[in-house]
Image (cartoon, rainbow, N blue to C red; front, side):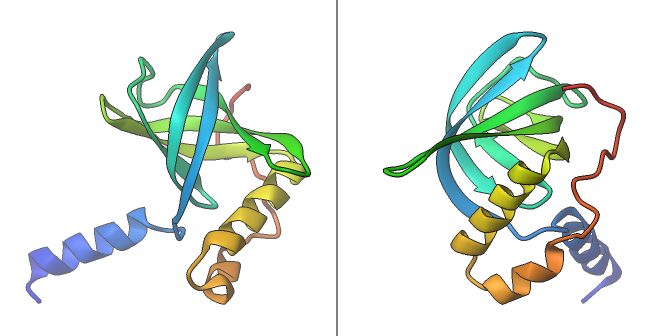
Length: 138
């Protein structure tokens, strides 16, 4: 492997700090009291989420991200404070910057449930999360 390929591999490994799992749910984003629905969350990780669909949000914007867990025995809404990492016509990537303990536990459960290697994913769980990584108000 040449130096350029090694640098690219290291860059991709750093970008993929958390395992992603396929997660087919709808979500809501709220910014400045404006709420927008997205029909498809394409993947979910302990660090963030990828959403399909366009938005007027820009990289750096802070938003409240909601997942609605509607099942036969539950109707739960979990909320995360998130920062937009990338945004375009096809979709956007969000980084979780803060969440309450219940949302964190839900996130862990979903990652474990959908992971190909649940035991390998457990190492990504942090005792000190939720943690505010930036100053944000959601």
